[in-house]
Length: 147
Picture 1: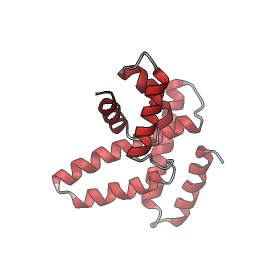
Picture 2: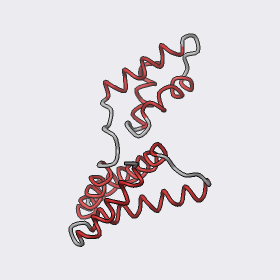
Picture 3: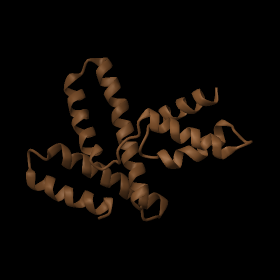
């Protein structure tokens, strides 16, 4: 089952769950809206990889919001964002650990041979880590291993 179909099925389930599925329904609708907007704007039909990119972007937005709400002492909003993140995590692949990212970066450095620079390494690493690792963390590890 494709991610798009899975989202549609889960939206139906959340609608039937009424009060218990309120947050899930809200998040799934938001994701479906982002998918539809991207498809209309780019005039493409998104595959699972494209949808994973949107899910990762939505997760990143919520992680940023979470940090800000924690700084501001807004526990009510922190709990709400954490609940939304839990819904999004169901659709994202398992996240890579730092050690796994380091291994991917080391392989990319070896694959680049003579042309070892930040740009070439990132070109090799990002397709492998897309949706499975935070870009900032990947960037930090690449700098560390190149440094």
